[in-house]
Image 1 (cartoon, rainbow, N blue to C red):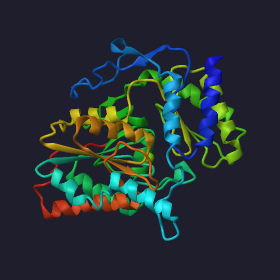
Image 2: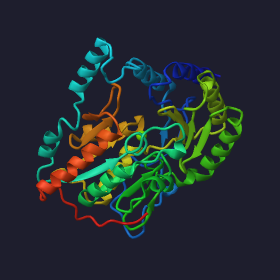
Image 3: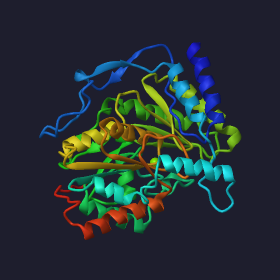
Length: 378
Ligand SMILES: [Mg+2]
């Protein structure tokens, strides 16, 4: 009963703050769920690969609902629609944006500073896909990146080890990016292919459950015009961008209702999308840490990781860099919002400019950024 009322509260709050990205975990009485060991980063890749075995798993408690709701309310305090000022922006919006930019400076304006920090080090680049390399579009199947962006990513990948870290399935994001020079971590980092074409899938035991919840959600949302359920292999996305606003609450209630049968799955929210994924202690931050270790790029004296992303889920990577006190998180956003990133970029076109700047920098100073990492195909 408590769980039911709690979730209803979360849904109501979420609907009110639908523009804000926030995390809502499934609630309920404390229960144990499968998670990775406290030392969650596997050792460097071996010939055996890293298929996760539940026999070595430990168990954690799910977050208390109150903590989740407090986190959500924290997000709600942010200015929800305070756009980057253009000519017609209100003075208070301009002031809010300037204050935000002072806190999270443009990575383009701060490019020299970033490069100074990279002096003598190899840059390892991590890129989210949707909203970072491609524009956010109404139809998630049509989130294509431009040929110019693809060229920029390809060029920078020749200079820096570069990975795509996306909520999409690994196969789907590769279909969009189409570059074999990159590493790919799909399903929020739960599906990684290493350079020797070995898989690391810490949530592999959840595959049947994800498939089942996907079918249930497709069926349950069939009557909601514009609702789009996407199977991202280790997670499921329910897009409501094309759903009439009056039905957003209904979508959330339907998803909540379906999830009651899946206590080992949790709900997170993104940009007009509800995402269902396993309750395991593994996120994009873990994926970045795993890739850095497995590629032997984790010596802070020699390497500088940079992560560019626009999603709430990218915050886990930004937090990791803050904790390490090295590496740069760059948030892509046109609105001021709280973030663990260090720098900001406004949109994918600025991301492309940043990538091109890295390439030009290499041309000017070949020894500054180097790449001796062999590449592999998906
Ligand atoms: Mg994104």
